[in-house]
Image (cartoon, protein in one colour):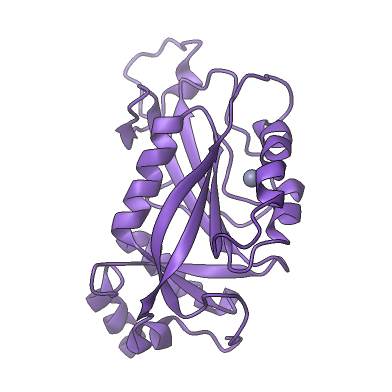
Length: 243
Ligand SMILES: [Zn+2]
């Protein structure tokens, strides 16, 4: 989370607004996503109306393109999250996205403003919005978030990386572990560094997280602690005074 925030700070000029997500909530989202693997989940999120972004944090991450009133709930820390739907990964053709998003479109279509923000997962695909995601986002009053997870065994969902867009990783990019054997295994391409193991037994290699507004603009996500301060706050303050 510290490295994620560092990148959010360094690339702050690429964003017109920011959203603060508590680390404990983020951990919960990752946990739910892992428990559902290889399925996709849809999560509705609401702001904590009693918890506005801390002004000093907002200022540190503010870009020159900053825009007020860009979306509902702007300026407030995300307060709670609920799983709304879960996709059944049965089909093996195309990208999982093509069919799960169709299936979810019914529930998304009837969102009817129940939640301010929405998050869905991309099992074995980068956290980059698809066309179906862009369509679904049109009904979102707040922001849409995507949590991308790279895992193995891949099953019917091999890692799909042929997507244009900016990747925002939580931690490092999945890299092959150095092999001691000179013999190539059929499974060698799955021999990636492991961040952790899901309840389903899947090995997790990479986590990505992004947020965007329905007009396609990227929103800068800041991971904050219980007091509303970003992880790595001291380091970020030092960085900004040295600039
Ligand atoms: Zn999607």
